[in-house]
Image (cartoon, rainbow, N blue to C red; front, side, top):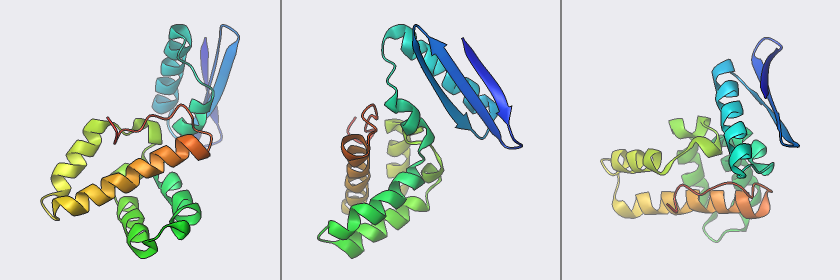
Length: 152
């Protein structure tokens, strides 16, 4: 059974406990908290629930990009180019969304719009960097349950 409670003026906390597994997450809207709780319950029932997913649900693309900019970009060969690509991603509406809320269809729509402004190689560089952000988050930052929407 899931419970959603208001915490302060601007936050809602969803708690799920089922079959000995539980998790909680905090969201800016009640609707997002309820949606997360429904999905978590369905995942527990289907045997797909992974506790690391809570962190991935809470982490926005912008937060992941900023961490990537701090921790990964300085070690890359093309620091300036990579930093520029990260800054470009930070300006997109997708940056405000949780990592788990970005789907391949969202990226296809972004790609199609971006191709109207820049060449295909530029778009490919941007998608490759985003793919590396997702892989780094899953492999090195403890977000093992995170699916890479670029790779789909």
